[in-house]
Length: 183
Image (cartoon, helix red, strand yellow):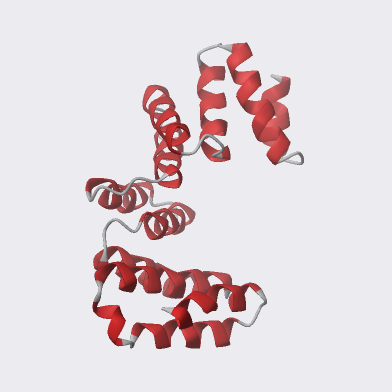
């Protein structure tokens, strides 16, 4: 897994071909018979493909990561993001629910489920998922944002302002957050 672990920093330096070669090589190693390791390696391949702008390759790799180990929450969140970009929210939800049903516990997973619930108009479920995400990771900005929106929808102005202030501190140039705070 050392080859695959090095792929992400190499990709971050813009050396996508080298990173992909390393991540792909990792998949052929004997240690990859372990489902958890294979899923992590497939996630790395997907991450590198995404960084290189190869969305179809990334989608396949993230899907293969979930097939190897359905608890690979990072792959589920990444795959859901790609499905959202393609305006396929049900497929996005499906990827997230595969990981959730397998027992994955991740703030990013819960936050992505919260965002999905919000975009579907289910304020109560969005609030519940965001709260679950913050129980796992109290600093999760996406969950704070959804919670802020949910509080706005409930006209809980002080609670909304508190959460949105926290999000604004993390994203000071986000016009949507500034507009929500103004509201």
